[in-house]
Image (cartoon, rainbow, N blue to C red):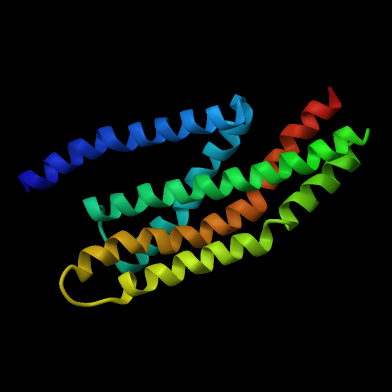
Length: 181
């Protein structure tokens, strides 16, 4: 019990610090708070799948599941960054071509998101295939490894939906407001 309390106290410091580091790195990458917030807003959505699979499996919050969630947040932020880079690149092409219109924005968002479907699916399948032995493995350390893998497996499913649907929608809404000004 004492070890759990100490671990809980450490996690109370490590998780916010990790989120702050992710925020700073995203800001350094994008240079704008708006793009950073788009990716950061996506993190809670990606964690939904991890929470659901934990509930389905009857797992409780532990150090192992916290590690799984921290790893999931990193992967979700990474895929969100890549999606945003493709969206920005596609939109920048339209702006350079003199098509800074709502129709041009919608084309750019569809094109940028469509370019990420196959790579995103390949990434998700590779991660889930890599986690499968941990998730279904038995033997020494199997129960701990399942608790690390479970949030990541569930989270990768919701992160995929998020990355392919939610981030383009948020980006589109944000850029529409800027175009209308």
